[in-house]
Amino acid sequence: MYEVLAEVVRNDFVESRHYGSVVGLAPDRGVVYTRGDVDETVLPRSTTKPFQAVACLSAGAPLSGERLAIAAGSHTGEDFHVATVEAILADAGLGADALQCPPTWPEDEPTRDRLIRAGEGESRVRMNCSGKHAGMLAACAANGWPTENYLDPDHPLQREVARIMGEAAGETPSPVAVDGCGAPLFGLTLTGLARAMVTLVQADGPYRAVADAMRTYPEYVGGTGHANTEFMRLLPGCVAKGGAEGVLVAATADGHAVAVKVIDGSPRATTAIALRALAALGVDTTPAAPLGVVPVLGGGRPVGEIRTTPEGQQ
Image 1 (cartoon, rainbow, N blue to C red):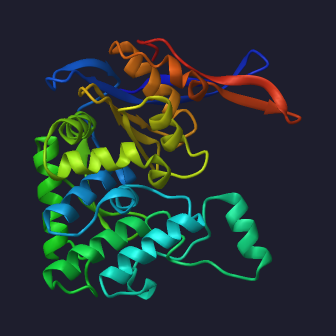
Image 2 (cartoon, rainbow, N blue to C red):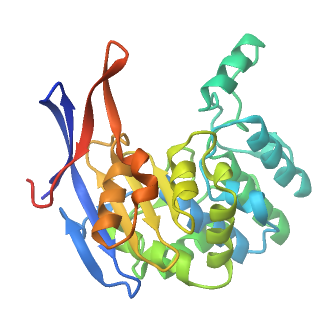
């Protein structure tokens, strides 16, 4: 059973509704906030990236600073992102042709428009997952593992990703699917995904390194104006990561964590929903209040908004 998590209101008329589930955990991993079925398995999509970065570190990838942040992020394809991805690959003795993510236009619109005007086409290095893929290739290079099949679920690196996901979430990842970028994608319950976020911000070693890199270099986790980047800038100490198909996770420095799944797959209200859940956990989200307002436009001006809904609305 899902709940109505947000409503699209145009001129005081409810035009659409977003259904889904949300879970909130205390720092002791206790479940203290639920909406909808939080024990249902979800495909975490790009919220998996911080844990894939943890696996790369635990496998010996020489990543730190902005390079580690971009390995854990979904960048928008700006020039500084590309330079960082290319640097990771160069230090691994590889070029952009080693990337097996699909070629795309950058998500950053000014960069995309400039490239089109210059006559350039889509590229793998501009794809939002290229930082993750570069990190995986760096781990392969550090271990002498083959790079041509690094996306195979039976590859040593992907087995390490599955192990880290299970360790962080406290459950066995299942099913194994294929993400949009071609990497193995391990399913978790929504509660397990939130537990993984508590692990990310509380555990030492590679977990803490990834969390610290994301918090220190949020512009490499997203990009200019990106919701995840602004979330972490406005709420210092928090880690936030969104994924395709309406998934988003966030955790505070002390271990309050939330995981969101909007069942229609739309991400447009997920940040506002997560902020409402964090506030219900007692977190002061006031500095991020602008992210909780999603305007609905008519003729180019606001005529309504997407509103998060009260608990218990079916």
